[in-house]
Length: 265
Image (cartoon, rainbow, N blue to C red; front, side, top):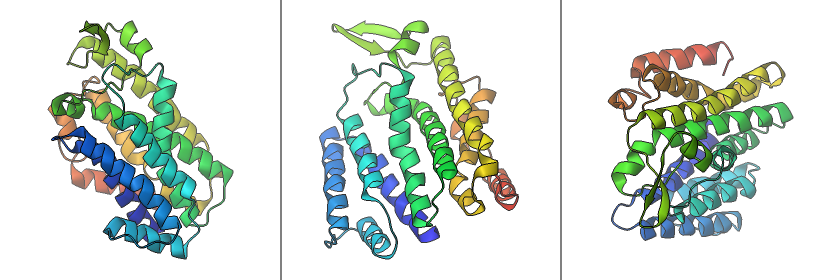
């Protein structure tokens, strides 16, 4: 599954970083629309002069990979790219769906590439993707604030509860500047991610052994959770940017190896 893992993660990076084009967000949206069309061409066996697209084409020629998950991922990012600052998610369930569409789908595709057909593995992948996706959205808050594309990833109910809603030019916005209220909202969202992680691990006894490596992204999600906890859920703490998710690269690798050797995720 390693070849599939590299190709699928490269696709994820290409689409995830599309909106980082600071000069003009429309360029990022055009890039995502190009990928939406590229996925159709890949499964139609058309040649595309792009290294990641070629890797995916090679993958689909050798293995049974569903177009559904790739399309769902890029379409979720397109919908997100079209959002404005005042398009605040109504509830955390909206962000959970976005996390599943962008993170869980990557795990579903990898399981498919390995020929693993297991409801338990799919269920665990769903929870791990939701946990990872929610935590990465929280970690990205400072990045979006500094890039000028201040898209809110705090649902309106939590924002209202913790005094983060503000009015600007007649529009309701979420204040994502460092504050006690933001830390409390981040804590509540991180708690939801933690519940998903726990649910995924409760399924471990029923997950096929060959699926365990695919589910190892649960480990970095746990590391990010612990790093946020140590920093009192302050996403602007510079310590979160040190090493890998706030811990030393060596310690990260050793812990990851330990989980892998023990057949845990």
